[in-house]
Amino acid sequence: MSEQPPKDLYIKVGDIKAHYWQIGSEGSPIVLLHGLGGCIENWEFNLAELSKKHRVYALDFVGCGLSEKPSAPYSIPYLASFVQEFMSLKNIKSSCLIGHSIGAGVAIETYLMNPASIDKLILVSGFGFGKKLALHFRTLAIPFLGEQLMKPSRSGLIQFFEMLFHDHTLITDELIDFSFERSSLPGSSEAYLATLRAHANFLGLKTDYAKKMKDNVQRITVPTTIIWGKEDKAIPVEQAYIASKLFTNSNLHIIDQCGHVPQVECAEEFNQIVLKFLA
Image (cartoon, rainbow, N blue to C red):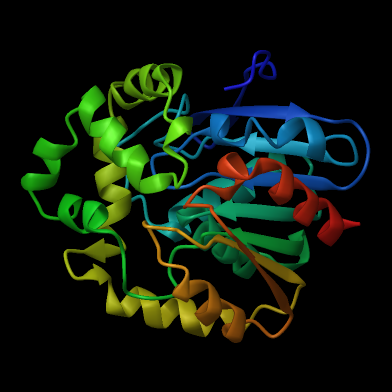
């Protein structure tokens, strides 16, 4: 967690009060899309560096962070529509989208909704390129059992972060306390489970969504960078190679000694990959 995060800002996106950060006044825009159950704080180690040359927006998805959490379908198209409307409200005519985990799927869907609004894509530990998912996600997809397991607890969060991070020294008391507070917000667990179950079940990624993702990727023509941690336990690194082959205009970066959250665990290397790609 950074000592001085950006100012919390809010905007009405449709009927949803959405929480976001905005930093940087020059250069092309970047919109940061976090992963399942994540929040804009997941990008704290990237904002300062990226904003030196770009206008950076970090957005809490509807159902996540400090954005409102209505009863909703929480499909990837639903989240992508939310992103598109946010970009329109902020007058972001053309942007690079950086999507982490399920945010990568949202970034792809956002591009397909309006290709002219996206000039580059960066997909980080992306969701949707293969059926394999960690047992954690597959278990939560089981009705009733998922509801019991989603009850916030510090011990449960420690186990969750042990799956996400290769370097367990990053699992600090501050991180656990912050995550416990956010996961305890009304509607957080319900939105998390609804998002997960829209795309996955106990067997892993739903077959129809996997097929749709493959078909969708073949329609993408903008330059795309794929970043993955070699030791990713949430979505195995083999899916990075699958993704790389699907895109017609992409480059792949595998980061050693890194888990599911490269932008946090290997922030310096991550930032340099992004800046070089956008230069």
